[in-house]
Length: 257
Image (cartoon, rainbow, N blue to C red):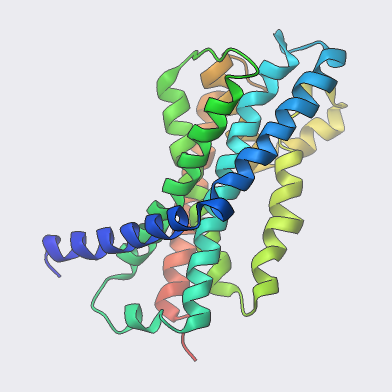
């Protein structure tokens, strides 16, 4: 396929994905906004007033970057896994399989669509947070790069989940039993400096810790880990998961019978 045809294929997938989640915005955009508002009220205002400062900042300011990142992670992942698995279930994915569209274009299209939803949710949550605290930007390039790479990473993860899933229950297993625990244990609500040495070491193997702290460094200038190590870790995960996704797609895993 020539570059123009590749762009048409890519943009078609992206536009379809964006139209899909914007058309059903009460299901895709509104719930995360409501959930994060409750987090701001309960954890930020009510509990935060008793916690006091953390990392040199009031508790609300400390948890806002983590909550924004949590919304981006869950939304990017959910968009791709639900969309691609729905195509498998409806067997409309066969249209892609018989087309001359390369696998990397298919993956890039779905990942970009997932990123669009994740970043859109991130903007919404950021605007909502302004009603509760003042956000300062310590390092804007770090903020932008971290949130873009993180949304891309979990969009790829959602694609892999959709490929491997054989029923609707499989779509919810990873977010429920893997994604949610890792997110809550990823330093969203606390600094790992508060943990005993053993649990600090355990926390260091949690990939979400690096994403949350990289983003927090960009906004507040504080981090439990080296922010540049965070970026390297995210890039490594993206490369590894993308290679796995392309290999599964080439083998027709879960989509060819």
